[in-house]
Image (cartoon, rainbow, N blue to C red; front, side):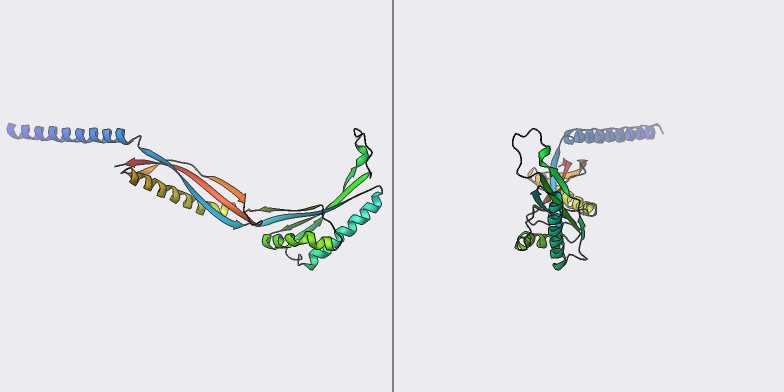
Length: 231
């Protein structure tokens, strides 16, 4: 009986030593690999159509009689409205006529020279639409077309916006993460390792930039991810 007790004791002791050895090895491996990591960036890009545009067209004149200037500008604004209607603006955009912008040139008491005309008056139209391609194509030919009608634009500027960014965000984040993982795998292969798990990950840096085509936008996300490496 005493013999069997010694055998059991020896087996327990051997198992304990084995378990201790495994724990020590695991600790050494973790210590060795804890600083083995790689930080990579993943990029995702997409060119999209803007979904909102605000187009401003304005005319301006100078003179000494405000009523005359108002009548001239109202006539020019009416010409612009007629042109827009003839080119299919109805149903595609909302058009708003803005208030007069008046400057009294004599109000500048610091000027040593008397201006040739007392008043500078301008008036503008704001065109808002979701059909950004239609507006971009119409805008490109408008200045010359109106000039032929005797209307010289003082301002012909369109601001394009992309408002559906949140709808693209999940898909683009996935693409950026996949790109980062591919880069990390390539680095691991070159260093005779494999990627393990993500240690750190940012939410990604998003940006929306103008593209070569006026009504298009380039949406970009860059994700920075750190992976641990193992043999």
